[in-house]
Length: 492
Image 1 (spheres, rainbow, N blue to C red):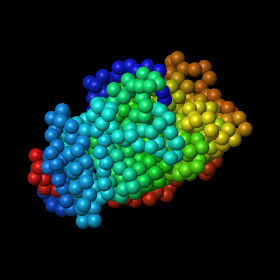
Image 2 (tube, one colour):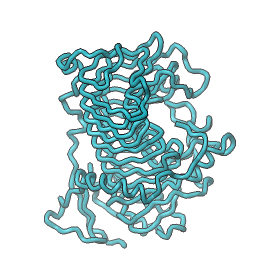
Image 3 (spheres, rainbow, N blue to C red):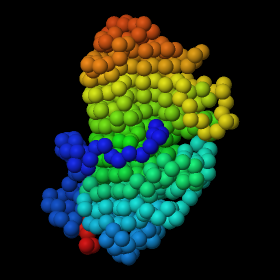
Image 4 (cartoon, helix red, strand yellow):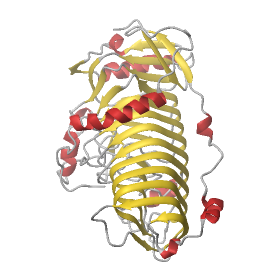
């Protein structure tokens, strides 16, 4: 969502911290780091030992200090980080390596990771993104997008970047990565000429097999916070993401043309969608043809007053399928689940399952948009119509909602196979007079309050259970077993 003017954060830091505390307590309990495989029974000693769960443990370890890093918040550390990664890449075939970031404030611009590698942030470590735009390298647009999102030219490389990698971990003891995005947001709102290239993301990994991003706090990205793209076998766990609610395009987590992804136990406050599922833009995404599929989202808490908790699209031209979301808490957000597409997108969104969602203070519980614009260029195919089918929502409760649902398909291309079951929506005191609006949609419902449109007529629980139940079988990503890793650190 693009906003016409930049405003200061409406939620002050102190308010955000208050909101975060209760949820983080639950998150810590849910994703607490397992203790010690290599030295079982050992007690964690501050500044000496690291113990955490990961998809892989490493045979070698070093600190960024060993490569000249200075954590004073002023010294530029890009070279130190890149030198460290390059040196540790030598151990890729010898058990891999870990780079430890001690307590301190580490100013850096973009650096690239390597395979069989772990970046670990101490709880008091803060990576600070450089404010010198000239230090950020520029790269080509994504092939499935054809151009940058902010400008037609290329894009600035993300703060933490990697491509064509295997087995990459970015984790810590709740260390912080701060994108210091205000400079970029101001340039974005400055209009043409202020941004020659698309703003960088905070973390982006491309063409990578085996990703873990966990136990970190991510702040104020220039644009999207976490962007795995053209990748597979991804675990994103125990992440806190905070950005001003009016900051432009600060999406939380955006899996893009990815397979076998698990997002869980995350808390997100952002100026755009908390989780946005994507797969390419118009004719470029259609030609690239790489869908996002086999995605699990669970135990997510989201605050996004101007966007969606979970969005599917709008860049969905490569297809989105088999998405399973459950145990979601939405607070003060524009919509709970939103499908965004339009003529020229092509592609599909199908086999989407959401259950166990609690929504508090919402504009819409459900929103489907078939007239979403924002094309990559004027070369899109007006005959490329998206297929939206098999959308299933069940076992939900919402309160203080302005409108239950706004469901808008495409004339001549209706959204079909919609099933809504066991959903209770309590409308706000000043709610819209008509709680549901439906055009060009087809489906069934059961046990929904207030009653939905006639195109989603109540067919009873037996029929909805047979046609629309949440899949019983697990996806492959849910069988992933983490290892317990322990390290004795000799670094400050």
